[in-house]
Length: 158
Image 1 (cartoon, rainbow, N blue to C red):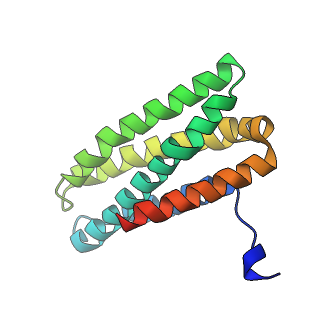
Image 2 (image 1 turned 30 degrees about the vertical axis):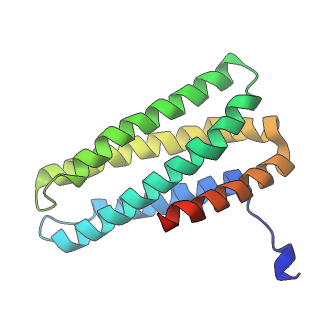
């Protein structure tokens, strides 16, 4: 297979990989101690970057395609819940970033952020992704995957 014919990951594969990466980073951050300020700071910067890029590619590419294809009240409910959950993370993350990483409250805020992101990822993986596979099909999901990768590249430059 030539490079030109390399397989493009579909949208669900890309988002699931992001979820796994975030789970790992958040677990690593949650395992740090109050005296590991440098490590906490570095991990939080990685988490924040990953969360923001992931959220943007979902909001800019994936969610609009899902919303446009939504057929049932349940589909629409999942769309709006996902958006609201992003809004909650948008409140919690800056609060964590402003916290002193040498404190126990920092650890508590990491736990809350982890719980929010885990809940969000589980709902997408268990409810939204199976539905979107039926609504959009493999070919459209591959197109969205390519669009999401292109969007990620633009965001990574910023």
